Length: 106
Image 1 (cartoon, rainbow, N blue to C red):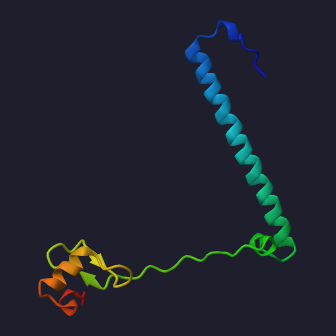
Image 2 (image 1 turned 135 degrees about the vertical axis):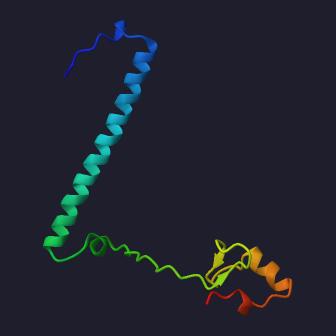
Image 3 (image 1 turned 90 degrees about the vertical axis):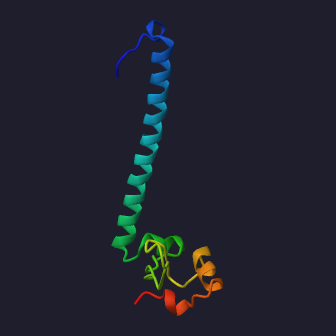
């Protein structure tokens, strides 16, 4: 390890060194955690389990995206899948006399 004469360094150099040390400590801890997690996952895999099964946590699956069902009549970039809260442009179109069928993507 390098020896530093801390008395000879300027304030900006000391602050930079302090920031570098804090970053090195943080990344060291992250690397240690990742290495430990990999070892535990490998051990669980050797036993025929996943880490989530052994830890008792649920594995979340990603939901498939729903294709858009409705399109704004003047701005085709605005779409709505028909799920969730109605967008304001959809509500405005309905109150303006347009039907939902007129806004459907065909």
